Image (cartoon, rainbow, N blue to C red; front, side, top):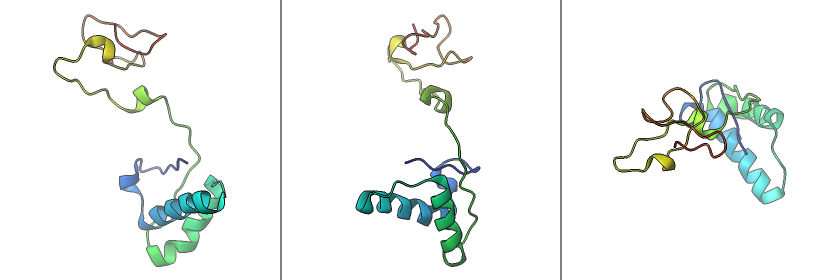
Length: 105
């Protein structure tokens, strides 16, 4: 289950969005009810007067992991262990991104 808001990661969720996400997850685990954006938004709107905060759960499709998360440079890590998406700066100078493996070479 992934829920998205315009503010980004879960650290930016409002209290109502946190409650809605928690209830969506526990409903899925305990009752087998697969959450949707609409059901999570409806729950958020219902709990917002008590929990507080905005309800801006949106339908979104994230990009590939390497596009969203910057690879941390680790001293001594082999270049071939670095994940890339062929974006500028993905791989250290003198290396390139392999489109087949999504690793620097």
